[in-house]
Amino acid sequence: MKRSSQYRIRNWAEHNKSLVQRGSLTVWFSEDAIETWLEESSGKKEKGRPRTYSDEAILSALIIREVFHLPLRALQGFLMSLVSLLRLSIPIPHYTRICRRSVGLGAKIKRLSRKRPTDLVFDSTGLKVYGEGEWKVRQHGKSKRRTWRKIHLALCPDTHEIVMQCLTENNVADCSMMVGMSPLIPTSVKRVYGDGAYDTFECHRTLARSGIDPLIPPHRNAVCQEKSSDPWMRNRNAAISEIAGLGGDENARSCWKTLKGYHRRSLAETAMFRLKTLFGGSLKARNTPNQRQRSWPPVLR
Image (tube, rainbow, N blue to C red; front, top):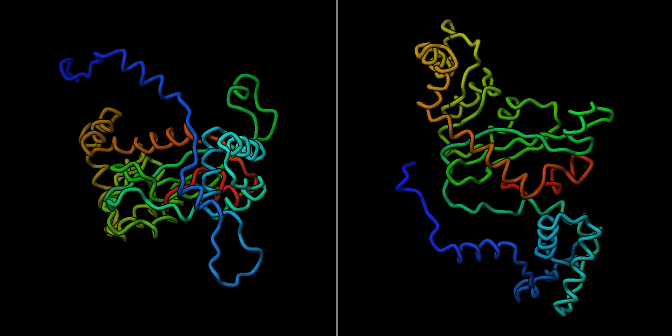
């Protein structure tokens, strides 16, 4: 970037005030939130006890929990004190009710952007369930069992929204999850980005059948499948030939990625960093079904 185009802060007093304002805490209940806090009766006879609290009330409690990183019991106490300070006459759900109701909330979150994605970036990251930290293992070795899960994400590089997600065990390969999630890819998608973990014949075959161009770097020891008559091998053979024509070394691979615009794949790393910074890198539930529903932030379907 040229020096003349850099943004320079001239009003330091206002800039310092804005930085101080970031730590200002103001929590209140709007009139709409108070009116929709309790579940309205639909008039239909349903099995079981009717709900007392609305989905908006449970979702508001869960948002406060994630912002302040509170356990469920402490969350109930925080809400009770908050209502008492604001002198409101609304009941607070028990922490066990918040836990049970949170399982079915994720599917109702809608996408923020109306733009249909044309590109998708696939990647995965690990989420800790329990076990020792990385520093302790590096310094003193592993002495206890460590368990984690893998969350596979497909996000739009234009809007930075997560389009698809799936939580699996830590032994599930990334390439198999791309194949498993391919039926859910929107029809507007024309290109898919992925790292070398997705350079498999099955991934290329699956994307080609959907009319999607894969932008996946081939393995360093990959060779052209010239005898293969399958049309889905053309893109992979072309990538191998282009890298070989540029020199076939690491500089050639870097040049190929620059020419193809492969740098957009790094936006997946940015999304994972952003989510882990906001919600942490650990899961709260212990069994897999609950982990998929409520242990991490609800993800767009």
